Structures are given as structure tokens and as C-alpha cells.
Length: 458
Image 1 (cartoon, rainbow, N blue to C red):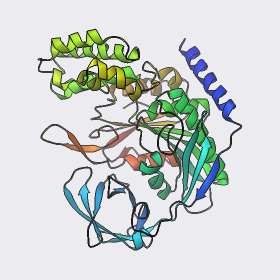
Image 2 (image 1 turned 30 degrees about the vertical axis):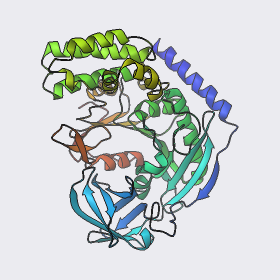
Image 3 (image 1 turned 90 degrees about the vertical axis):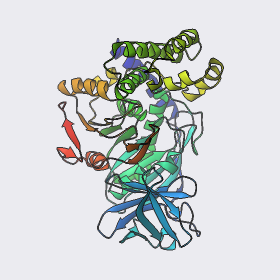
């Protein structure tokens, strides 16, 4: 039965691709890395080679700010001063970190990062519009300087609704490391058409169209080619690779369980972190809540309200109850029925809540790298690591790495007095491991604090 489900899913995807194959993409603008006359976004945005040979990425930040990133995971928000010097705050905190940046001619003449000078890397960028599965999508190819073949990675988005073309720093970071990158705004976001959806088949088919457009634009420069997908992209990228074979798949903080199982695991992790993991009564009550919210989601938010209301009343005064968060249950617990009925269907439109990726993964021959955060509250990796371990023992070409101190998005953090997490950086080794895998290089036993588990589970 599992194989029949997978076959039907892939057959539907291939029909969609065939119907759209008559449409060709059109490149509308080249070298979008050039800047305007004023020193405002996007003028300083780009990748810079520093005197010591390392790279520095400058990307958009919050309103009026820029953000710098290093390949070792360090990052900071930049705020312009009246003297033309941009001062930095640590990660996503508001605490000054002592770093200073000065741009020469708005970045066109390079920059100074603390005591290091840097020159902008002449990345070759081409913006395009191409046909996805029934909608027109906006994409961008970014290539390293030169004319030789390079590995090419297609960035597959998660559930976010912002523009990938604006916000994805990896499109410059990978290119500065010698890797071609194709990023695109998912349907219903940024400059792309269509309605936002979380239907994995639709999104995977769009990803295959993006792959084809990337190959068309890159031409003879295409070497190895594959996907990198974060979070929800961890369901989409392997599906796209099964529809149209590629050379590699990188999954960052994604899962090999269903969305409903993700929420359930997240609730269990909530209680463990709050000190209630060993209390069977607390865990039993929390799992009853998980079952109730799952029924709401599975019904399309049409039924199950009475049961959830009863459980909220029953457990509201329990010491463990405020710790229940989950991936989506927090929203259902924090709003009344009228608001949920009105708004929730638009928050997760089309999501296949019971989608089980395991039948597909059991039959996927593409080499895969799965990367996890050990403190991931939204997508706890314990069960996924167990399942991937089974696949590794069965001979599937899977490598995994766990960055123990990272939350969702692969961000390390500090915890504020109110319990909220403030991201400080990404873990050292995370970017380097992805880049090595994409380039097809021999992987090292460790990347930063993470041990690589290749083909056999840790």
C-alpha cells in the first residue's frame, strides 16, 4: 500500500510537469548585483572577499538595517551612524558586539570590516520569470565568477511567506564558495504569482520547474545539481528528487515524520525541557491535547472544538499546561473557536497533515545530507534520527549531523528572563558541511561540534 501511494503521488506530479513543459522561462535582467547611485538597499548587498581570504555576506536586515554573516555562523545587525560607520549588534539581540563596517562608494568600492578590507566578489546574477505548475514564478540564478562548470543547488523554501529572493543569504554565500545557486519566490510570495500553499506535491513540482530553469540559464556551467530545503522544504525537496532525479539533497532542520507527528513530538519536547518529561500524568494530558488539536487540523478546522475546549478547562490549572507549545497547537490553544474557524485554514492551506515521507525515503537513491538542531522546539529530531538510522542500516545513501545547541532554523541562542530565545548565531561547521557535501568533497568526521554520521547511524 505504501508503494502504491508513492506511485500515485509521483504519477500526478509527472502529469503536472508534462502539462507545463510547453512554457519556457525568460531571463529579464542580468547582473542584478550592480547597485544604484544612492547608498541604500540594495547597494551594499553582496558577498565580499576580505584580506584574510575569508568571506563576508552583507544582506538586508530589519527596516533601515543591514545584516552581516560569516561562513562560520557569526552574524549581526548593522545600523548606520551619522559618520557613515555601521555599528553591529550580536546576532538577533540588541546588544552591541563591537563590530563596525564602513562601505566605500556604497559597497561598490569595497568595505572595511573592523580592521579587514574587503572587495565585492563579482558574482554573476540573472533574474528570471518561469512557469511553475500553472503559475509564473520569479527566480534568480547566482553563479561564481568564471566560465567553468560548478555545482548548482536549488534552494527550496520552508513555510515562510517572505520573499526568498530578498531574504535568502545562502544565494550569495554558496556562490562566494564556488557553488551556483538558484533561488525563487514560492507561489503566492514575493514577486511570484499564484496562491500560497503548503501542498507538498504542488511545491515539489514547482521545485522541479525551478531546477529545469536553473539548468537552462546556467547552460554549460552546470556540474552536480540538487536541492537544499529547510524546515518544510525537508518534505518537499526529497519528493522533488523522486519526481526528477538529481545528484544530491540537503535537508536542514526538516523531518521524516508527518506534520501531525511533528506537533506531537514538539509538545513532548516542551514538557521535557520544562522538567515534566518523567511525569506520566503530565505527558498523558499533553498527548490528549495533541490528539485534540490533531483532530481539528485533520478535519480542516471543521470539528473537534468541543473536545479541545473540555481539555483546556480540565488542564488549565495544571503546572505543566503553560509549557504546552507544539508546532501548531499553541495557536489552537490560544484562540477561540470563531477566530480559528476564520483564520486557521489560511495559515496552513493545503497542508497534507498526515503525509508520511518514509515510503518515498525508502525508495530514494539520491545521496542525502540531513542536518538537525538538538534544541529544535518546532521540529524535534529524535524520531526522525531513529527513522533515518533504519534507512542507513538498510543501505540508503544518507548522512546526518546534529548541532546540539541549535534551535529551529539552525540558530544558537541565549534565553531571556521571560524564557524567550534570542538567536545569536548559526553553529560553526553548518555552512561548511553543506558546501562540502554539495561540492561532492570527502566529508570530515566532525564539523564544529557536530559529528558526521555517514551511511551508518551514530
